[in-house]
Length: 98
Ligand SMILES: [Zn+2]
Image 1 (cartoon, rainbow, N blue to C red):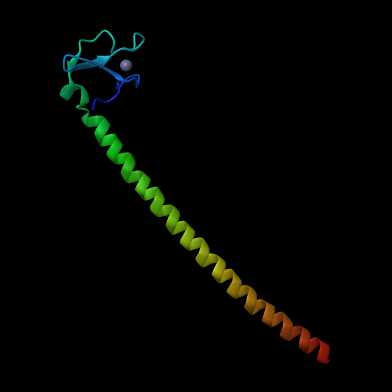
Image 2: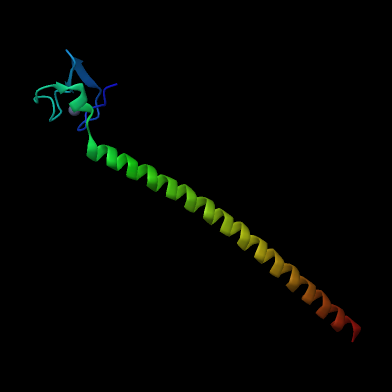
C-alpha cells in the first residue's frame, strides 16, 4: 500500500513501481517519482504517529482516572450530606423537646 503525499495528503500516483504526487498544486509535483519503498519511508511521520498514539492512550487513562475520582468525590459528598442531615434532625429534635 502506498501512503498519501506527505505534503498535500493526496493519494499517491504510482507508475512503474514508483510513486509521487499527482497534485499539480503540491510542492511534490515537480519532484521525480521515487520507489514505493522510499515513498513510504517516513521515520519522522512514524515517530509522530507513535507519539500521538501514546498521548491518546494517556488522555484515555486520565479521563478514566478523573471519572473514578469524581465518582469517589460524589460518594464522599453524599456521605457528608447524610451525616449533616442526621445532625440537623437531632438538633431539630432537641429544639422541639424544649
Ligand atoms: Zn502532494
